[in-house]
Image (cartoon, rainbow, N blue to C red; front, side, top):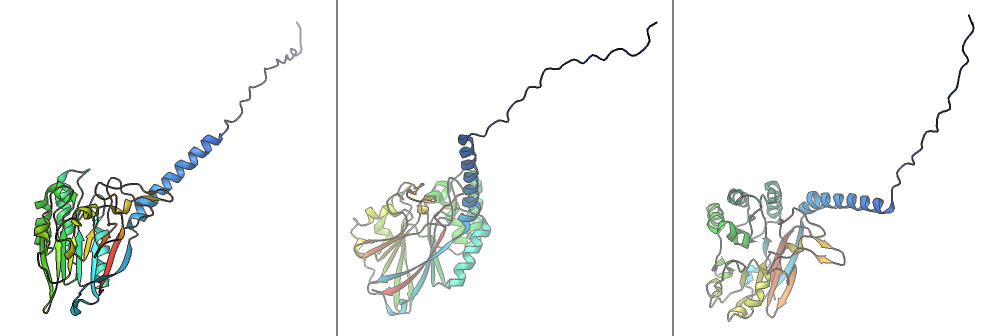
Length: 304
């Protein structure tokens, strides 16, 4: 009988295979960086930039402005697009700012709601909410016109709530604003993108006073200047373009609607008439603004 321990046999194992860590290529690095930057830009544009509104102050010389309207203050807002995508709280903030400015008159140049992407019943309800919020404006008078989205969702569903809450809507109409024996004419035409404005009805034939004319689409000015009553108009106010909504350096506006492609924002002169294009408060398509803040325009009339 053999005693003692059996010899220990060592078996040599093959070396473990070593796999190098996957390399992070330059292309992947750039792609990841661009994606991160895009997300940050989208967040900024959707959360902050579209709520950082700007108050633009303009002095408007008006020929033969009556004494009682010297330094008359008007605030213009446009393109509210409530619910899609402007939130009610933001419109309430805008109204508070307008009340702080204590204007004599507020003019609203259309698109209180949006036509889609949500069902049209959402827009009808939003029109009522917008009308209620606008009724808290403290200016002595206010008037509005319609935009293309308002007509698309049903103009009666927009006009009804507005007028029930004290905002007259001028559709091919003119109305005087009076101070004693002096007056201004406030005019509004039907939406030029979806309807055929009747400028003979919108503009008084013999105003004998300054004429302020509202039309939602700024590019319609090229039709206005050809009309026989164009020489009677002193100021035209429009919106619709949103100022391009997203404006990139060295590129300019990315989103411009039909009839808002030539006269995008700010002041333009047409003989005796000045056109002012407001960038609006809301957005369409996507809830983004970049380098193009929402605008509240504060106009002061002086004698030319």
